[in-house]
Length: 275
Image (tube, rainbow, N blue to C red; front, side):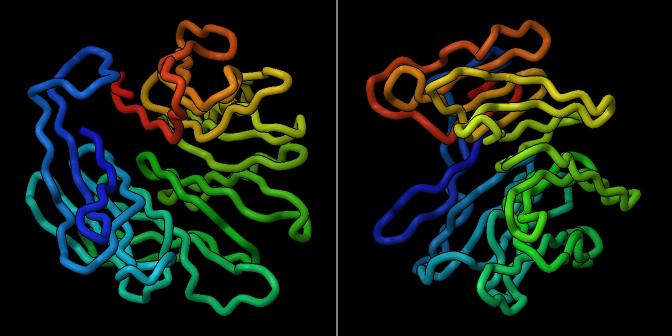
């Protein structure tokens, strides 16, 4: 299944697409079923993320980001309001655990955001990280959550990984800037800006090994996602934005081209071989 936001009338609402297939799918098959799950009139719904049969999204009442996080269980057809502060953004979900960046603290000359979690089964909200700095863009797998934040006196971005079951937190601490992490199992992928442009790097949490996925002078690779042994990302090496894929178990240097249209394709997501 995949999820997305779709503009209907003057606002966006959340849809899911159910695809029953075991093969790699790059187009929507005829038997795929589109179903709206977020349809409150007059409420803007966007930034959806899906994990199994759980979906989260942001509702902002057309006032712009940040907003509030909503959790939806597709199996139970049950909706849970996760936040009501109007100060949440960029949610992610793993099982019954919801994560987001939180803007409730007053900010000075920079945006002071924190990382929060909410357990739907127990209705308990927890602070994951509340250092006095900017922390952005969560992603989660199992009990692990990743994000990036301003470090070294607000001079660069770095990736953080925290196991919420043990409380152990890891900072990658690589030179220069790393942003936009995604996690699956023991693998984390992210954009690395060390070379003055963006490349895709993979980090193995079990071995601490760093593996370059791309290294192409003169072009940019960004917006990575990962599922099982597949990594996808946006790439401008052909002059426009295309989607590329990288197989961890049988890698092709710098990935394989997935889309060939002359128009831009970007912000890919992958799940079980479906891009």
